[in-house]
Amino acid sequence: MIELDEDLTRSAVLKVVGVGGAGGNAVDNMIEHGLQGVEFVAINTDVQALSRCKAPVKVHIGSSVTRGLGAGAHPDVGRRAAEEDEDRIREALAGADMVFVTAGMGGGTGTGAAPVVARIARELGALTVAVVTKPFLFEGRRRMKNAEEGLKDLRACVDTIITIPNEKLFEVVDEKTSVVDAFKIADDVLRQGVQGISDIITVPGLVNVDFADVKTVMEGQGLALMGTASATGDNRAREAAMGAVSSPLLEDVRVEGAKGVLINITGGRNLTLTEVREAAGVIYEAAHEDANIIFGAVIDDRVEEEVRVTVIATGFDEMPAEEQLEPTVDEEAASQAQSEEAPEETSQPVHEDIDLEEYGDLPPMLRRMLEKDSH
Image (cartoon, rainbow, N blue to C red; front, top):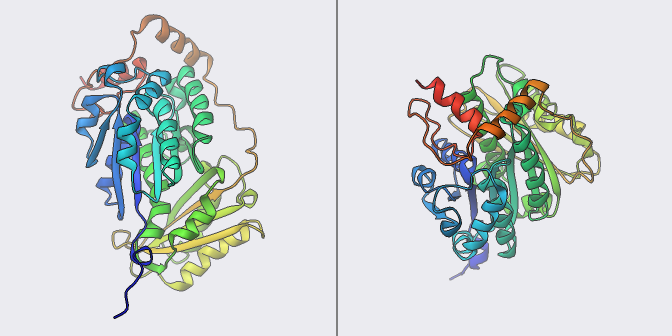
């Protein structure tokens, strides 16, 4: 009788960890979309938000620091909360081969605790990838400053960090998009970032990629960017691929500057190898000739007539100067008024009709606006 080595038969263990309010929302969205082959963990300082999260594993951090009321938009509080419960975080992450840390940068818990979570994941030997958002402009100068500082800390603790600039989402959505829908779209882009990587490892498809291939492209690569697009019709695969490599989410960075490129091509059961070749060809043409490129083709019955292409470009030595997303004069004045008049943020519930209770880290000004809209 032939016995197979356990290491050869076991599947890679992937864990998605949502940190803070936005991270928890992203995890909920992934669960609702049926993300396959991954384990979900939610970590938060806010007891109420954590209790609503759908993740099967929940870790409440910093009870002595925050008394369960959230970090109040103070990253230092979020960091101390995570450090207080390092052992519990370590237990939740144990056994993972790959850990996705997802969070919204700019608030208290996500910004402060995510680097601690990422550091623990790497100490446990997991390939650690952060998929995080930067704030919308309307969230204010203070939140953007917190985000930039948090990103520096997080970058030092992960193998690869994929940053999604929420403000760029306005280039791909209708101008009448509501505030509530804007945050939902941000959640969905976080999902696409994680799913674009995890699906090609965990979901059987036309072209399968193993964990070692993904690790080669993402281990120790630093900054990364993501582009995603979908298309239907006769030239759907090529059009989706072209949309992905020219996505506004790439922040005007060319794929050819990347050392590694990960491509996920997803379609229904009518997806053909010819279409996969066409889509991959577009990426190969755009990428540097020396880049390490791997791609997987995934079959998803829910996609039907659509083809979706996600491109993760990794290993940029130096990112070009980003477009300065400074608040306008009116926004700056509003931000100053907010800091002078508004009390410190707490995890006060928002009216149920808005269905944004879990966004406990929202600035007071935006929270008041949402509460007003709900009445």
